[in-house]
Amino acid sequence: MGVFRSFSALTIGALVSVTLAGVVPTPPDAGPGRPGTVAAADPGRVVAAPEPLRTAREVRRYWTRARMAAAVPIEELVPSLSASTSGAGADAPRRTPERAGVRTPRTTGKLFFNVDGGAAVCSAAAIKTEKRNQVITAGHCVHTGPNPGGILLPPDPHFYSDWLFVPRYRNGAAPFGRWVANGAWAFTGWIENESFKFDQAIISFKKRNGRRLVDQVGGNEVVWGKDQRQWGTRIWGWPAEFPYDGETPQRCDGRTVPFENSADAAMNNCDMNGGASGGPWLLPRGRTANTGRIWAVTSRRVIGEPILLARPLPREIRRMIRSANR
Image 1 (cartoon, rainbow, N blue to C red):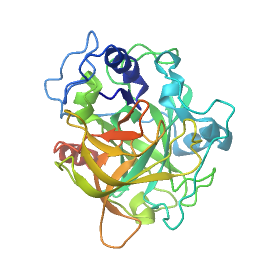
Image 2 (image 1 turned 120 degrees about the vertical axis):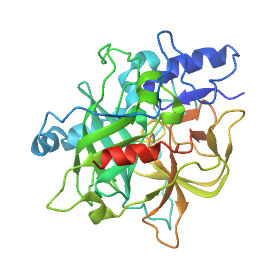
Image 3 (image 1 turned 90 degrees about the horizontal axis):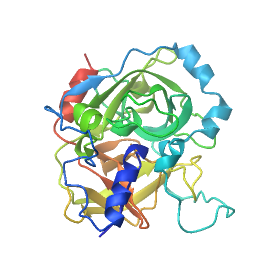
Image 4 (image 1 turned 45 degrees about the vertical axis):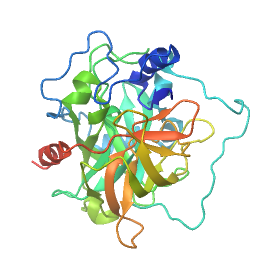
């Protein structure tokens, strides 16, 4: 039996403690079942983040090059829920393998956000919507879920803030600009119950130099209700835990399969880790390298094994897209 490790720091502790004890993994459509967690009456209901407190100029000033370089996966901001990386020691060099012949889609990028004063990172991808200014990412990249924890997070559930999307980020470079968010949406199923079925979110962005995000970089289609078995899936992400450093994009290609007896889809032989959360699971569309069809976003991985996990996007993603386009 595999041992789950969520990319969300908010679920690691509970999952590790039960699986190491030999208990059956989390049920297919439930969260980790922490004390005080009550199932949402309508888990597919969409909740919007509060209006941004900072202007676009203030957010760009906040995200200095030094702060962006220092940003870490959310796990590292919650030490009590972190797990050490097995394998090479801390003094070993980080690896950023080059994969020749495949250019990173400009629709994909690194997502920075403010976690109560800490600088955090995820991955995301631009999507085709009516407003042409949105990305899809993981729910735990926008909201704490029902049980915040750690030394930085206040005790009450809340949205994060100051999201900044950098398409095709690489070693600090922003070839298609730095985009400032003006809205974010998450499912009640994540916010109230940490249900992995609803570990998705949409973030919208302000215009930059008079242009919308999708007009600048293109957008991917969003497809839902897919089977866990998909041939030819390509996953992009910016993993930032050892042995990666978060400065270069990484990809995994292959066939996805159901993971054990859960509702998760698994990509085997994929060793991406924290920072890759929210990265797109793409099906090809023609010969273009910049756009495709997103059918899932990275949620978590299996401890000690190169297995990445995600849920196929639920049909409720349509409700979220409608909400984000009002």
